[in-house]
Image 1 (tube, helix red, strand yellow):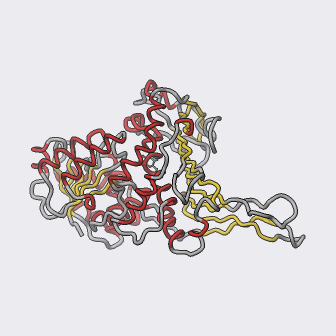
Image 2 (cartoon, rainbow, N blue to C red):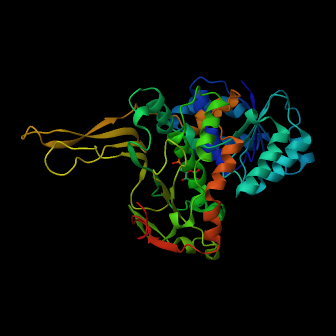
Image 3 (cartoon, protein in one colour):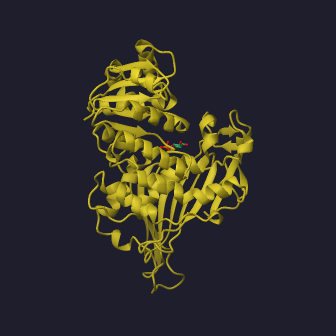
Length: 450
Ligand code: BG6
């Protein structure tokens, strides 16, 4: 267990909204509380930082974790510093010794400069370096970040964060596939017709224009989170779930994904409209948005995996902001039965849906119904796991502080994920694929795959 967490960007939005509440969870669950050394630009001393941390916990942490807040806050200290300056970083880390986790809770535009500064001052033996997403802005940027990271710590001590892997339903992909005999034999192109991985959000910009307008839906969500879900669905059975094996199997799956042809991509952005009882303005007119950037708030890709298991099976990945309804799920659609002895049309193909909000699993089956003994009726078997309040970030931090990188994205995965979308990014930049519009609160653009 590593007992010191150094958060670069420790006075930022991510730290306040996600990291401190997640640490409070771990502490409230009886986990050891790490000492936190926060480094940031704001002119705080330790007391002022502790007051800020208290406010953030009050605003963002679950009330059920309140008993752990004081102990967590007591263990925090703060240094003002420019994290891209080696001398300032050295001073900021003064007095911190033993293996540490250095967490870059920073805008990705300064990852490279910060990692270079870290490489120059070096970190104690056994330390872990954790980097937020998006990991770079394209493939060569990710490769450059990997190069610098490898100068600081070995690959198994790096942690490229993707909180989606630690979501309960996502971990359930592993349980379902590899904890049961039933699914693996049909988990291939002989039996699966198509896979949909969808993360439709009702949320709009939520004050994040500064970041989001430079990223867009493809870089913010699809290239990382949704491709990770694809990797877990598509990978071969791992021999174990350790830090060498799980990322390696995902990397194999991603390597097999064909670079997406731009004609298999859709991009769009929302215009003014109403989502539930909220009125959202035109994306292009929001403060902090530069309409000339043509940033998309909706991205959809059709992908193919060139290997024995998945040849010919389309995987459609899509995500969008300000949509009319939340749909967050992995849907595996099976092929129709080869022959139906029942009268009438073929039974509907079976569908397995793993839902991420709320967590659950549903399997549609056709079974004999009432009345005519040979009539079919659709039934859905559902699993609703016990309610859980453990944030995915808490699970990620727990494994990271234990020095276990099995839930990290590996260097190869990070680069492969950019390779998969690089032709699409280039075509979008060159305006070869039209940017469609959709009204906030609608189902998305008219022209789409799903
Ligand atoms: C983040 C994206 O990584 O994931 C956000 O930056 C998105 O734009 C969020 O809304 C979705 O994840 P969750 O876990 O908050 O549903």
